[in-house]
Image 1 (tube, rainbow, N blue to C red):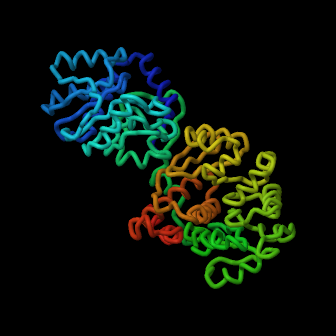
Image 2: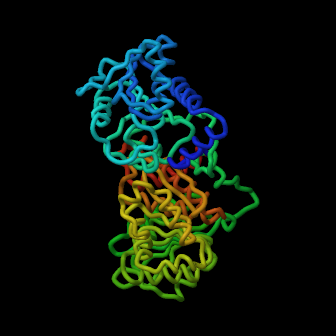
Image 3: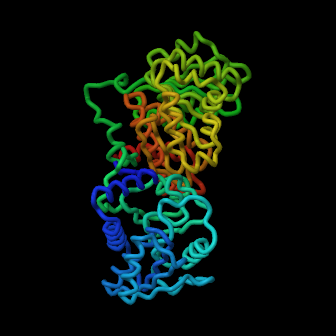
Length: 493
């Protein structure tokens, strides 16, 4: 797993390293050297510097470019420096490196590559003034762009930006921050790497779950095993208006493709007629209904959940009070792992938090930002700006595992935090979350650790989407295409 530190945790870690005896100028030297060695430099190079320590990294970079006979020019947004930055700025002056104040209308088109050293990870808010002018000039230059630490304008905690540098390569210093992955990051960062400069985390880090980590959720299967070994799982959903949602979770075999032993699909009775021809391996459990919408029946619910290790609930279930009644019954009576998605989340938003806090089952919630806004009471903008602390606080308060969907996915049990960054633009289509619910139900059926199961499900779903997009294209692919590529994603592991 790759370590991720919040902006504040990175500040603390940097300060602790300096307090332990490593001078700031030494860390700045290591940072500049790491950026130089990791980057690709097509001469001549424009090093665009702000006024803080990120600019200091740029001055070190300029010195190393000069030492290696790579022509460069330093552009200053202002004649203002941090204490450590001024030390290396003066060295640049002594070395005879060309230094210019940024003109009112900068033009970087003559340069083969650009080093973005305007802001570091501590920046948040809107970019204005000369910084905005510089960023816009960098983006329209067409030059190969290397961002030092993080793309200027991009929030280190949330990955949001009003204006930000688009980089070909971003070199994170010390550790990645959440903003290297979340929200707008994928649209702004083509490739990234983190360089170690000897800063130890001052507090427990969060982690990016990668293929080797996800593989742990798929243990080798023994010959001496059967379908019960890998879990009976349930999928509950569908309504007269939204039959497709539960089809994608089960009909596309997302749950069984995810490794479930048996899938038991529950839907309003009249919908089962249309589901039956296409659901070959799964079993059907008709629910009481009225005009195609489910009607809660406690005896049916009790019969249905018997023997199920995991259930995914809510895909296309509808917004009636009956959906809420069934959800409440599951939370109070079911003792396996319960994945709540879509209309299940909408019903949960109307219920008392005590339902979650006192749940008989282990609960995994799978909201996107709007659904999490309804659950938590935070605005969508607040969630986008700093999603991990809000997700973590909600999970800790309610005792759930939370999977917050987005371009990168945040998974937390209130203590541990994992991110996954698999996925692609072609998945921005109806039904992608329903496919994910099917995969999650399967993984929760044979994994005791909900955090690992959730991270693995998000990774597999995202990777399957990437494979589908590579074959079909981001415009034409559907959620069904993602489901069809789940076997290939798992096989890669």
